[in-house]
Image 1: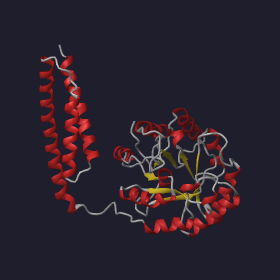
Image 2: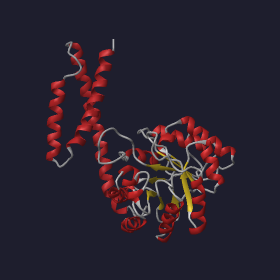
Image 3: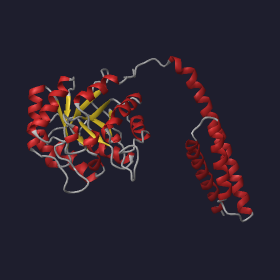
Image 4: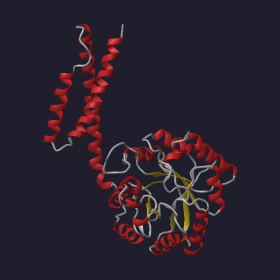
Length: 357
């Protein structure tokens, strides 16, 4: 089912939407201090976690419902809209009763169809279809699961929907806490161009020094905004201290960002794009020719009782082609990825020939 008839959740004609605030609402003083500093720097939407799902028990799991009163107070004092994460039916009820303006669904919850259906049903029962809801990508890189989570809300009558790209969990040590895998949110945007998609550089990077470059990268790729964790005293934060920045630092980061004009003219690109189109057509024809030869090789192997896989030949191709790519200023790992895909398709087609009677 397509995500159709979406209503505006943000004004795309203005600057990118910025949602900022602490990972967790820890104390009333901490939240209000942070909110005051953010509001003074022009932030319009305050985020804070009230319920915090942790990987293991024993960690700080949020202050719970009392924190909603602090959010309401920040809203009253500083004119901020408020946003928080919900994961259960009761979370939704409590958040809306307390006047929370925007809800988001976390990565663990969006991966759970039962939880998503419960949240969708609760919003429908409460007649809250006009509440803006953002859905973070699931922890694992599964685009269809992400779309399914959005569709459950859409089927419940919600039309003010958006998505948050927060990266994907990965085992082992990496530069990023969660790998961006930008091609996945880009494909989401391609399928649903009316769906706003914002980026969470805090959770992707996991380190405050990565927030700025990731934010710029997201805006360069046309994301509609950012949700960034900001704390009045990040080093004393009770959760995710390494990825939070002070409101002052956030203000500096935002002041340095270059916002591209999505309505900018593309006339100067027309000639170059035509060249790309022509080259792509040639690539398709060359690949088709290569596959025809692969099928002929498969037939030869079958007639001479040879195995499909010839690992020596495979390794030779990989080594020589990647070396050639490097000489032409291309990334050898990129060429390896391309060659592997071509090899797998060649093997598949040869096996089809082997299976024919």
